[in-house]
Image (cartoon, rainbow, N blue to C red; front, side):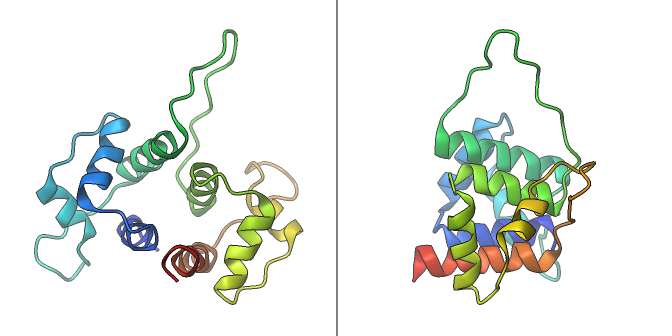
Amino acid sequence: MNNNDVLRRLRYALNMNDRTMIEIFKISGYTLTSEELKGILKKEEEEGYIQCTNDMMELFLDGFITYKRGKQEPRPGQPAPKKEVLSNNVIFKKLRIALALRGEEVLEIMRLADKRVSSSELSAIFRQKGHRNYKSCGDRYIRNFLKGLTIKYRG
């Protein structure tokens, strides 16, 4: 799945309008016009398509976390978070954080999309990349998660 597809599906699942999407980008410090947003939300074969880069997607996800959960001030002496290379695992983690979902809730969302995932398999997806039990998150996990979100929030 490309970043544009993830944004389109997330927008539909959570019923976000243009103003909300632009506000989320703005929270993370990225100024996006309405025309640029329309280009990002188009499919590749459509005229005016704009590719959503990994940097843009990461800014959106960080803004989405702040939009849903509020700004979190770093504690004194707390190290700055390490920047991870954007992958399906990182996208999945950030969506889970933004929506304040616990493991059982993620499993239920996956069940709504008719995808059976064990809690240990889900735990492996959320681990750090170097961990011995780390598992790479494939496109179908993200696709099924977004499908489950759509069913949960849109019926």
